[in-house]
Length: 208
Image: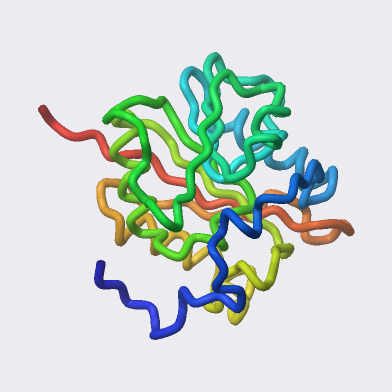
């Protein structure tokens, strides 16, 4: 799929297949408690409930109150099985297969927490999230300034936090079918700790 990003933007320092990297079980959180609280507050503010898809998830999904039905898609079966909020889990490598293994209009919303920086075909993924989220449903991406640097795309590592927001907003725009994305810093810039940024958009309401 054509995109406006420069050559090498989606390259990574570690080219090994993702299933190898994510095979070891890591029951840890990748942001601090303040940022985790900001994720949960965002989900509340956006009214994410009903059937929700957690993309690139793990053993915790950071909802303050679990949705009615939470499907967690990730890379490590042991981590997914440990997620107490999940009502269904799916092992799936989005970098190998951006097409999601779900029917059209399956979910009321979707989230992706501190993982969007690892996508090597993000526009394809965002387009397919649009397919599986019902019209009017929200897709929310959150991220901080932490990552596995060998697995994050080079374009992410070469840009600032504010530019990361613009990058994710551009994914929504290029994927098509989303309302105008909104980007926010969800933690206080004057307090210590991990920053938490969010970019989200609603699937456009289509006639017919």
